[in-house]
Each structure stands twice: as C-alpha cells, then as structure tokens.
Length: 174
Image (cartoon, rainbow, N blue to C red; front, top):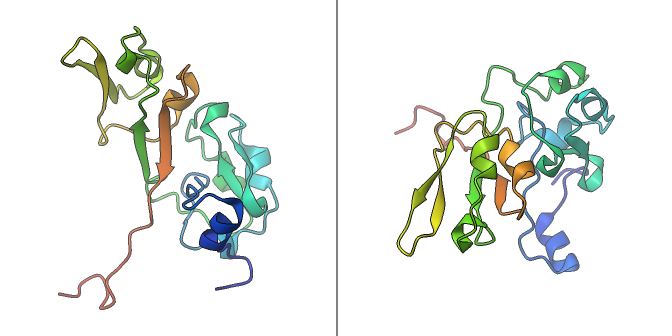
C-alpha cells in the first residue's frame, strides 16, 4: 500500500462504520490511480462551476451531489495539472438507488427526482396498495446527481462502483 492510500477497513473500524461508502471522485478521473496521482491542489474543486466538488477525506476531491448536479462541462479535467482524467472514458460508474425514505413509496405524491432528471431516467410505476415506486433506467442515467439534490427526503443515493478489473492473463485471456 502506498503512503497516500487510505486503508478504509481500518478507518471504518476506528470510526465505527464497518463499510464506509466509496467516495465519488470527479468525472472522468481514473479511480484506480486517483489517490496515487492526485496532488490535492484543489484545482478541480476551484474550477467546478457547479461547486459540487469539495475536498473530502484526506484532502482528495469528492463530488457532493447534495450541493447540485454535474453538467459534465469538463472544467475539472482541464484545470488538473496531473494525468488523472481520461475524457475518452465514461464520466463515472455510479449506482443509483432509492431508499425506503422515498415519499412516493410512503403514499405521498412526490416526483421531484423524476422532474429534475434531465435524461428522464427516473419513472414512477404504480405498485400494489397504491404507492408508486421509483424505477431507474440505468442505461439512461448519466450519474449527474440532479435527482439527489432535488429529493426532499434525501432518499436518492449515488454510489461509486468498483473499477472493473482485467483478468490476470490480460484482456484477451480465456
């Protein structure tokens, strides 16, 4: 483990959180190399016009979607002096979820996340008992975070997915 990497297991033990959520790094950043390449200069944080990037654990930048959404303008990648960003890749791999705090699931009329989603990736489907449940089209979702900030109950979540790994024989191994 290099000197800049954080042992999340140990930190979780010491803070009482067994599995702390993986931080969501700026879009297009290569998460598998992020902590070893990032100099923590805050250039990406300062360049973000939406101000959703903030210094996180250890001073490494993280996206905070409670502050707003990402417009994918690329200012963070352009401002960074380190070779962290790959604009040819997808901006990020995020998993979207809706918790049981969702007002619609509690029979309160609310479609805030659906209304805020610029990609129309969130729809509400009727369910038995009259409560509507949010359905997320993972293919349409860009991970911009507009739904997170708009949810009055804080029920919409975005989580970083682990980086895909290449099998030990290379990408073309049987």
